[in-house]
Image (cartoon, rainbow, N blue to C red; front, top):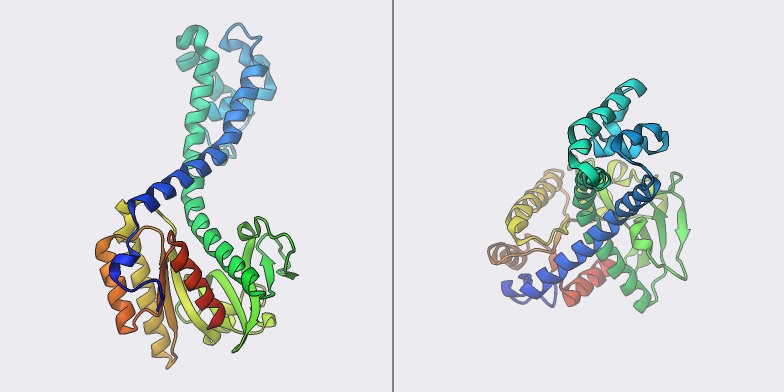
Length: 317
């Protein structure tokens, strides 16, 4: 068990931690949305000389922007030819931009940003999960650095899955890393993320294997060597308290499936849970599982001490 988890109350996310999490997400959302704001400013400069929205039809270079303002996604554009696209822009001009009068440029920008807002929302839903994983990876790398543990890693953008040497400057490595390799007192260790395990037949967030790096096999270790798994865990990075219980139910179901699947094969497996939003009811249940040994370890992602203890445990088992 995590030495910083001595009661269920230790697991509960505090108001201050929730607030900090929301602020971090807001900052990330601004980063994601900033390119669209810059595009809108560029569009405004490019059409500042126009006298009416009809003039937009005379500027072919702004058509992608206009189509977005009309509410079309990049995927939908694949099904439209040039004639269809011009027709859509004309309808936007006649039905919405002309009624806006002198504010037709701003009206176009508002509609562009409205469409891109959906894109930002979709990106952020993915980013919230990634932010949690990146925070966990950064903590692992920090613990390795403090302890002088050397590692190799896989860049998820590298199609060859080649193991890379430890970086002297590992800034933002957590955004690229999909797997880690190191050696502890028990032997070689491979840690991977979001891997489909052939025994469980589901994707699992945190996957620790007793394995040499060659067995990683371009990310197929979870499929080809599931018996080498030491610990499988669930990670929930969402900070919104309103969804906390539902996230735990999903994670708990996944963890029970892992234990049952391995037990059916006569194998033992350790399991863990790391979550950002932990409310009282779920904290009681998590702590109860810790005490009975059903759950091997856990940590609140927003609690630095718990997260460090969890990461050091990962490095040592």
